[in-house]
Image 1: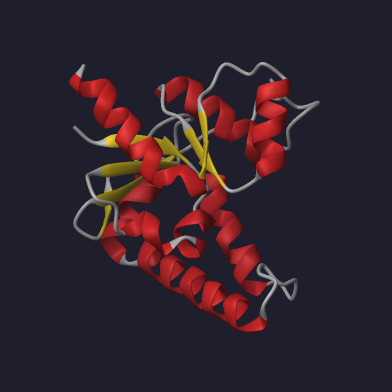
Image 2: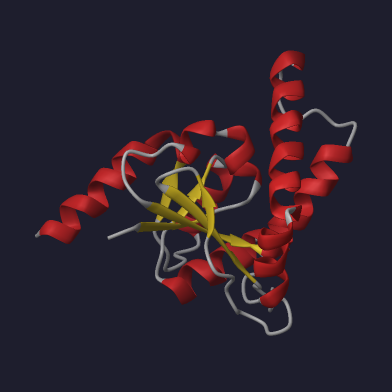
Length: 171
């Protein structure tokens, strides 16, 4: 059985270990976060503190964009964009990982506490019954403090999150 997480597309570029998990995993990624890759790639604002890390991440973002733009992958993505909350078929990322793009819609449910992309992550997590995987400590805090009914993991706990689901599935 494949483990599922809701996350942002940029996490695939920043955290290469997500692409080589120890077991099967599916990342459910809101389409708006795929579009955000273009902004991040073209921005003069650094994504990382060190210049060499920033160049590396921007190169990985460009590679991910190019991968999404390959004809078969672009076709999978475009198919889900006409109907809200439709998911693409899986886009393989190596042997054990795949991305499924979801055409999520921000309906302002959490508009006061969360920005539109965060809201889409929350709503996708609830719809798909899959935990959120993020590197944003402040987001995790706001989810907990706001009592939002989703499970969330810090990216640093990725291996634990994978093991926890394996443990839960076998008991």
